Image (cartoon, rainbow, N blue to C red):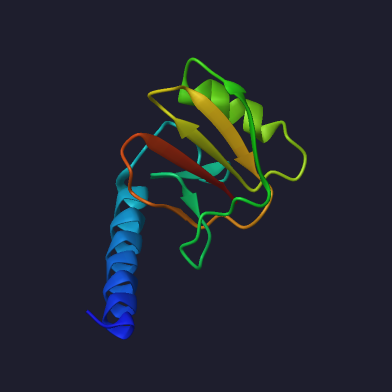
Length: 112
């Protein structure tokens, strides 16, 4: 495969993943009001479908996603929150967060 073929193949996969995450985000209901946060499945991505490492701070482990979300909402400048279910790791974002990537082990809360 040429470099160009690999690029378009990767871009197409990312686009399908983005569409899937958007659909899942609209159908998931974690019991939070829409004006507080929207939840999507997967770790958080920005609108370019990149993992926003800059502006991400891991700050502890929480027993539940709801506890993690509450802790994230208390962080000044937080734009989103990420919860990894298997390890109970909680992180907040201070840069743009647009969607989760679809990975079932993570939840991405997007603050509105």
